[in-house]
Length: 559
Image (tube, rainbow, N blue to C red; front, side, top):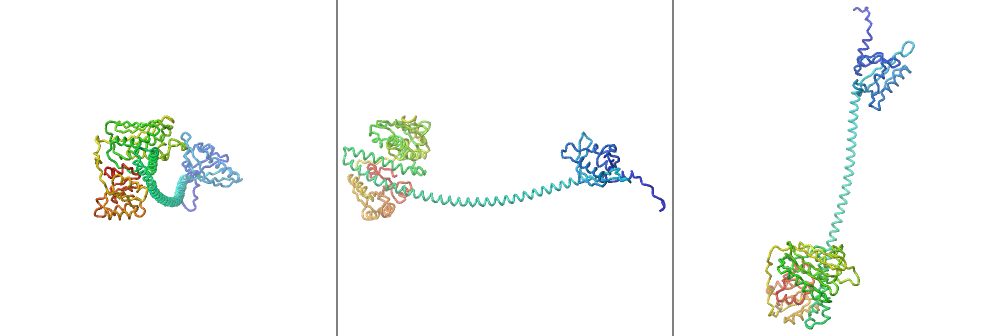
């Protein structure tokens, strides 16, 4: 075709239809008058939409309450008609129908509405051009969500960092508090240990200071008994009251050990029958006063336990002392010993004042009594039952109290495991006392009254007695004379009895002397230390004359 040949007139319908941008032509009443293929493809519609109102073809999604596509498009189209200017709409969500049972698919568009104006300036048509930006919105949304997630992660990280800082500071403060608390606990522990040691020293001193005058008074009473073989009412009073004082001092000292769990046991296979019989015999004289009766029921066969003979006797003595306190004149107390189902039952029942049933457990507390304190309250410290419970529990047993109520009497039952063997361990046969040998005895005692009384008692038994009052004098005396027996107090004014024992044992003839510690210091540690120092036996004051004589005869257990 030559240069002068005119080009054919283009087919504008084909050009319109071939345009890549989605285009829709609307009449001023918003009826669709033309559409190109790109628009049909973008909106998933067909040419049948031509001739229909645009808002009928593309309504709002009824499932989206916030849908505003129709309102925004209508506003833009009216603006074009009124202003005869192109209106570029903001990015707009405008869901399109899927044609399947009223379904819609989410779509985002970038619309531009352009007026077509004739020569008279009248808007004859509106060209509605759109771009599908759904993928862009989704990508941007994903980016925003990613940014939000990253921001949230940063926020969480910052919060965690702050939280870690706060927690680290709290942990540091707690650690500092714990350190201070530990330091305070250590200090409190040291203070408690120091107080415990001070209390132990106080108890040991109290033991010594109480038992020295008790020992002197007990010995003087026994000396009076020798001088008054027919007896005297005042002598009976002295014996009873001294016995009460001895039990109270023992309860006080043993009660302290019971509370701290430091009562010592020397276990052995023991037949409880002679233990019960002996304890009842020792206290029977007190029951006979004021017409009280004490009945004892023992089985014919041995009742064997693995236990401490003296401590078990102390349990019964404490229970009998309790019955004695709370049983009126002419009252009765019954002691019974029985075996059943591998258990030993020791029962003490009285017809005394009794107690409320709910008070049973409280009676075993420290300083507890069945009767309230008052002018008529029996003497005692309220420690005997606490000591008894501790001793029984240390033997693997239990002890309980029962009463139907005030005025109905009381029953105390101690239950112990029965030993497996059927025959008791052989006991050391006592030495014959038909002809007591005259002994050379040295008494080392700073209590002058007690030393003088012991001297008189022993001299009346035919022994040769020397008395000194200090440890140095004892060492001097044993250097120049050979004694058969040395009765030595531990708490002396210059050096203690342990030093005396070590000095005597260090001499060539020291092994032949029988060293006996007789002291108010009677803790387990005191006895252990006396054995280490060389004493053959350690006995607590006050020491009855019969025990002293048995000791000199070699029949008293070394304890």
